[in-house]
Image (cartoon, rainbow, N blue to C red; front, side):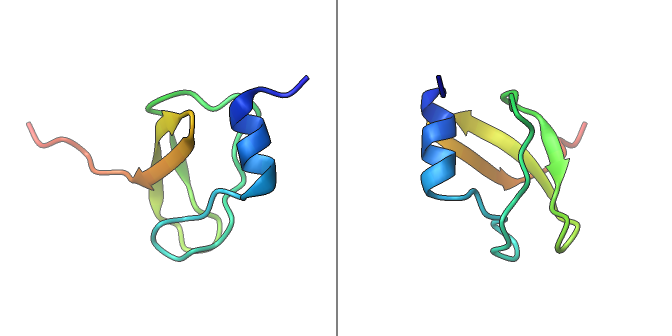
Length: 62
């Protein structure tokens, strides 16, 4: 049985917001997880699980 986010991901692939290339996501993405786009190298952060959404990662300045 698939989770809701997997159903959505299978019908519409998640794409990199920087270059538009499809992103290979882990099987169980975690909110706040940081990953890299294989196509352009952009750092991406999982911002939402339902619906699954990634954005460019912006490190907080201290």
